[in-house]
Length: 245
Image 1 (cartoon, rainbow, N blue to C red):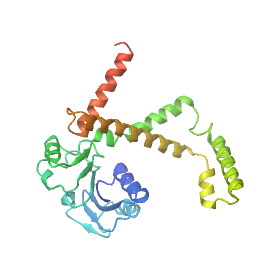
Image 2: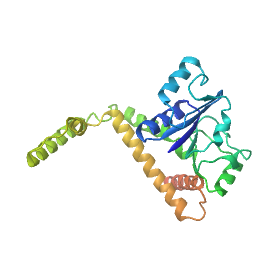
Image 3: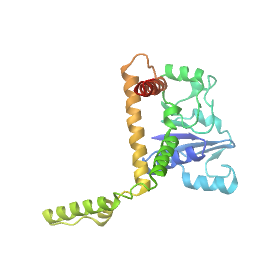
Image 4: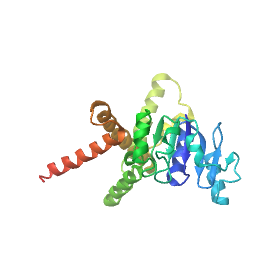
């Protein structure tokens, strides 16, 4: 997939980095306040980030163009506005070419633009879901602080021993040996960061499934944004009801 990222701060940088390194996406456009970097074969995100830290600008990096904001209208598969609100308005909504927009920033699509894009069939992953990862992991951190023990401390060695016994049994049954790289991956218990990322992925996957189900099944939810708000309000109501309020 070809991806446009507007804003290479913490959110935009990590989104671009993980999409390119772990999902095989091509980050073809990175937009910043002083221009953009364009490379149809994929931008080296880590190198661009280092260049910005060194020079304070995207200017001078290979593929630099001065007219940055115009790149919002470039041809790609996914657009990730990750910098500021209302970068997509009724003035430029008709020129957006990507079929999917992921709102990594807060409110990057204006209400008027939202209607225009929805009428055109553009799918918008709303900000209240898309950028909830930070709050989710903060919740994990709060739980860790309450327990006063790091994630994985109680089960990591048990997992390693269990997987070790499984590998040993498979080798005995087959007469073969595990490849070293695969063996290391199978034997290593989950580290704290592994467990946090696993919990975040599980939370985001489950949440999207609930939101998507409401969007696809209920006529009163014409888009994912409305569906997400409906899910949130219903859960708050259920919480109050369970408390007898």
